[in-house]
Amino acid sequence: MIKYKIGLLLLMSCFIFSNIKAQRTSDLVINEVLVNNQNSFMDQNGERGAWIEIYNKSAGTVNIAGCYLTLDKNNLKQYPITKGDARTRIEPHQRIVFYCNSQTHRSVFHTNFSLNPNSTNSIYLVSANGKDIIDEVVVPVLSPDVSWGCQFDGKKETRTILKNATPSAANYVDMGSTSVEKFKESDPFGIGMAITAMSVVFVALLCLFLSFKIIGKIALSLTKSRARKAGASLDGTDVDTTEISGEVYAVIAMALHLHEEDAHDYEDTILTMKKVEKRYSPWSSKIYGLRENPSKKN
Picture (cartoon, rainbow, N blue to C red):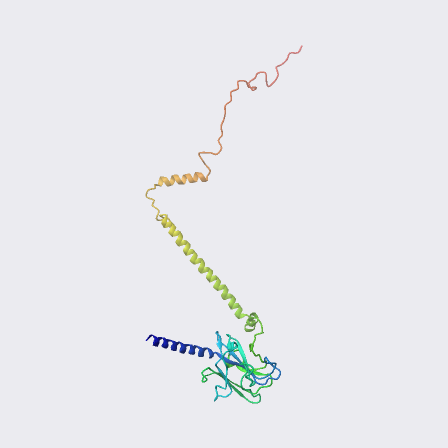
């Protein structure tokens, strides 16, 4: 019984793994094809020939080994991509190139068929089961060194004539203007810029208003909480005044008034007078008069 459960678990695991692999290989796209190569890209042997570029549009690594390339829809297993080469693993948003020159002895990336530059070529990428077509493309007759493929990598609906062949490289590189220049082109009169600027200012003011309002409420609640702890409310209505008479308030008011008017009972400077006894005083001396005594003349 235990062996039966283990076997069933392994079978389910293999089934799930196969489905995951099939799902991942479905993200492969025939990204670019060059049929008539006269002065374009050369392979690692220095020869020019037709080639097919496969692109991985997913966010995960996909191993194309085990899949098939074919020109005949009735023979979906025309060229099997053999396993054992680590280069068949395509990193996310990357690409690999297969050379269509019927020279399979060179490497796994050389197919057993060639493309005809004088006629239409139908190319199929088939999954590892040899039945499901992952992607297909019909390449018309083109001028030398002109490729057919996705204008934007991985976008099948944008397939068109590409004047510049780009094997193992992006089909489209934005070398245009900056984001500011693009915005200027899309908004030549500055209406969008004005609305955006006003919106930013309005949102900033609204955020400031809300923040100050919230902070004010928090401060008020904290003040009331402290007042309750002290036994009085914020407006003083909770203060018990029954034990304090009016005379006390009058005395307190008078003391404050005298303090403000600078009329104090106790001064900081004290003036004193010290009595000094002195029996002789020049003011009471008779020898000093206001005038001299009259003298008699003979």
